[in-house]
Figure 1 (cartoon, helix red, strand yellow):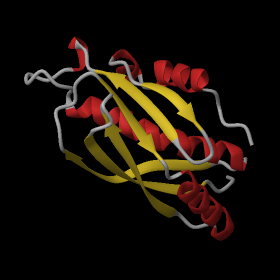
Figure 2 (tube, rainbow, N blue to C red):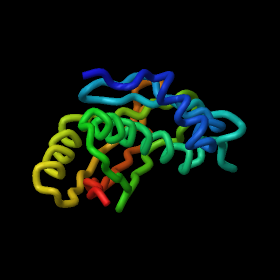
Figure 3 (cartoon, rainbow, N blue to C red):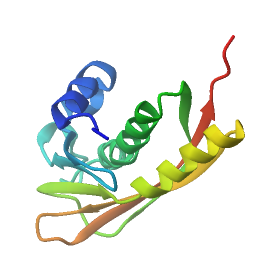
Length: 154
């Protein structure tokens, strides 16, 4: 199985998620099991407290999970819809410098997509993305509940 290249995912971000692209959110690595998305604290994505705005962290974290969802849907060959139904986040340290968001839930979303295809029913899957600074210290953790639904032919 060949996942899309990071350059294709970043081009997708430019055209479909311009606010993420403008604030510096970039996919750095994607594999069957994980996705790494990076963003650097800069003037354009800061809050008044001189750290990265929580919404920029959220865009990077969502992309880390969503890129895996999109990739497995494409690999399945089925027409499917995907949507975040719920999310939550915890912030543990000021996000400054470069922050990497890592999601290791590739196997979980693949199993969810396979179940949606097998049953024809909508499925949900919680996926986690952990943000760490360059020292490896966790700055935030985001959880997204993705809903997957196989589209029926018209």
